[in-house]
Length: 116
Image (cartoon, rainbow, N blue to C red; front, side, top):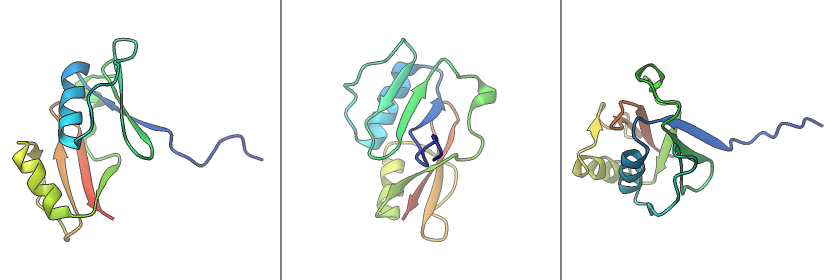
């Protein structure tokens, strides 16, 4: 038996300011921002499925994602796009093929939302 599970435990996003990133991500995702910042540089977003960990210790401009490393799911891509516009999130694409769009977080990480 292989001791490595075929599961993703966590995805790390490099952020410059852990407090600001925590507030921004929680606001955009509509999740509570009442968790604890761990070790002064980590914040685990309360997600379903794989965890997203914001980490200010690994941040540098060179470490930001130039292409989306994963996508967040939605059931309504148009509503998700409008939500991001209302939050003044920097959108880097329109809704493409009726299924996905890209955006940037305040640190310049490129991320994606996809209708699955």
